[in-house]
Image 1 (cartoon, chains in turn yellow, green):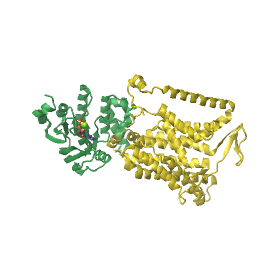
Image 2 (cartoon, rainbow over the protein chains, first blue to last red; image 1 turned 90 degrees about the vertical axis):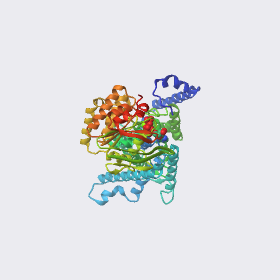
Image 3 (cartoon, protein in one colour; image 1 turned 135 degrees about the vertical axis):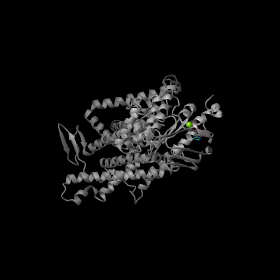
Image 4 (cartoon, chains in turn brown, yellow; image 1 turned 180 degrees about the vertical axis):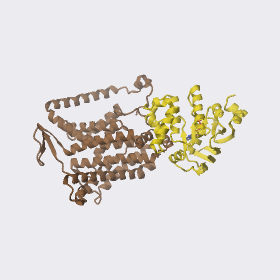
Length: 376
Length: 234
Ligand SMILES: Nc1ncnc2c1ncn2[C@@H]1O[C@H](COP(=O)(O)OP(=O)(O)OP(=O)(O)O)[C@@H](O)[C@H]1O
Ligand SMILES: [Mg+2]
């Protein structure tokens, strides 16, 4: 991390002297990579713009899911300076909660089962909302418990202790979930509360008959894509409202800047921290359900890669910054989707961590990040 | 209204406050003076609940607050304006003030207090939307004081409000302190600027390495020959 640089001097002489002598090698390498990536993208865009646009939409879907996870990373980091590695697993628990609610209890049909007179459409919408809400509540309770049991006792311990604990909690959730009598170690076909339907665009919007694929050279999208997109944007707006306009949100910002002084204002900092974990977990739960609906199969390690990529997204955007997490997540989604289509599918995960390394080397504070030290 | 008895506070092995006792009466300005490291800030931090005393009692309006969490102590009516102002830099001036009122719930009353703060500190009103971190040192002290008033305290703990201010601003801030006191808030004032502090205070305590070595009416303390040489530079 760079030192706090509030002096103009830091920008001229001092920081230049601090740079390693062979920095140009790394920069040259980065420029070559950037040129190659730009070449691949532009040539493919020219070759088949429709397919390119389709890939961008697929990336947007991924990115919006990552955004729902990334905001939890970034908010929790903002207030307790902890990378909560268990966050991706909370996302997984969200997916499983909805799976059991739907497959075991038919929760998505409760309005019609209780009140048969209700039209099927309304019943489905209300029922699906209930399923999502339940998952969000379960994730919230889980995260509050994790914070209470695992992190709070370490609040004054060195930060590395809490970080290692977070990794431990993450493994615990994954492998406890893998027990036969919990979620089982297998891949499970996900039972969605509602059917996914898709459309393609060709001089108008036409539904795709299920089981068939869309005609060549058209753009297609699904209802779950739209839901993910809308949910992600709404959540972002909601959080902006929360941290700018509400008492508890401003208290979150105050506490992340200076906890003792926040307490002198009468802010119950422990409660604010719990609340932050809760909000992050609720939206990770939402993301978990939507992700499971979109990708149709779940298992206990489902949260690992999306969690790590959302973490990279938060770092890329500037950890601690909400708009940063959103923008970072959208970039991650594009990077993954375009890599998958134009470089190679197995590269999709490698590219995420390549981005992490590049960000840490070039601008560790991320796109929207303030200089380190300012928030300490 | 505030009664402190035999307070002992430690930082690990460091015995920072060694059995200090003092009191603040309703309507008073009491000042606590002493050299660097004497334990003045430690005293205030213990009163406001940021630090815990190992032994001793702190009674405020008849209630023992020595084991109350900091946020409850604010509700009880004590407001602590910390050393170094501690403005929330990434919050706007207005948000800083609203945080000062965090323990209160009635929006209409809070709004009224906010408007009163803007009337007392017109400069803050001009800067309401600006980030706290961008204010000048003097403006930050005004903001810290105004923020401390937002909880409508009956006792205010002020830690070196004159620190780093130009002589004119020092005069101004002490004028404000007297004004606050006249409106009915008792004040416990910690100061390096002993001369100014003694000129506005009713009573004074002198703290030396964790012990109270002298106490009395402010004027008498100011005339004490030892105090004159040690703190007033006469
Ligand atoms: N967090 C801490 N950890 C260890 N020792 C501390 C801590 N804070 C203060 N001390 C020690 O306690 C003693 C009293 O400190 P305190 O800050 O109360 O002094 P002060 O009277 O406010 O001084 P100043 O006028 O310089 O502000 C000092 O010796 C100081 O070194
Ligand atoms: Mg001090």
